Image (cartoon, rainbow, N blue to C red; front, side):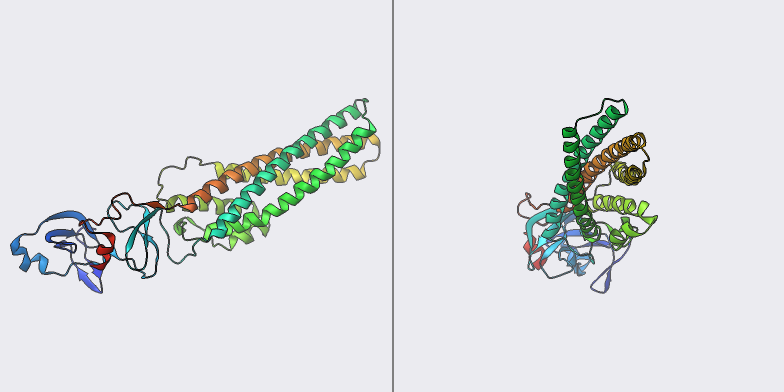
Length: 341
């Protein structure tokens, strides 16, 4: 930005050396947009030259007078925020940027995120139990096809447990869907996500799941964009350490839905079987379909759990204290003095 004039208070301030707004004995370099870290002792003759210009001092104050988190204006701030209490800067810091014009996150979001993580773990456990039932199905069908058969007590136990597992798994899965969509909607639109990485509006976080064909690709794109937006908001420009995590999660989701359709078709075949042999073979097909569906569901739930955990952690941004001396301004004054001058 060297060599360009900046607008301060409706007037143009050319780059150059001006009286330091925090120390009258110094001159500080203004680069056309902001104060730099370059300074020198002001010569006596400067009183009628460079120092006679009114230096821009608005750099230190936030653009709003209300209390809140703003970009840390002090050297070394980098990608972090400092709390403005309405009168002065405080030593309260947190890492990351915020983007004006987007809603802030409430505490309820993290409650929803915690509930979602619990439900996803429930889905993973349910899928693991479903896999056990599928293996039991394959074992019983194989025994029957080979003429070994199985006892009535075992058949009754299988039927009872199959109903319990199916109902419990269905309830957990159906409860997870609205919670996941709520979490995604709130995460996608909040002010801690860099909007330049978001290619779609937040309404798609709800609608994309219900549009035929589009629901095969759009949710994946939404989550991938959200992940990049969170990383950018934290100032993390390194290569993504888990570049395929979203793709693997979405692949597991697609496989689960496809095999779910196959298992539904196979269950219908049980009612259409003409004899016992055809029924046993159809039952065996359902066992294989449910086994694959359960593996995909367990993998998808685990991958979704890790994604939700990482993205939520990136949005949490816990507060930490300024250890540089209570928020010392470059001139040696306190942060409160830096604003009030």
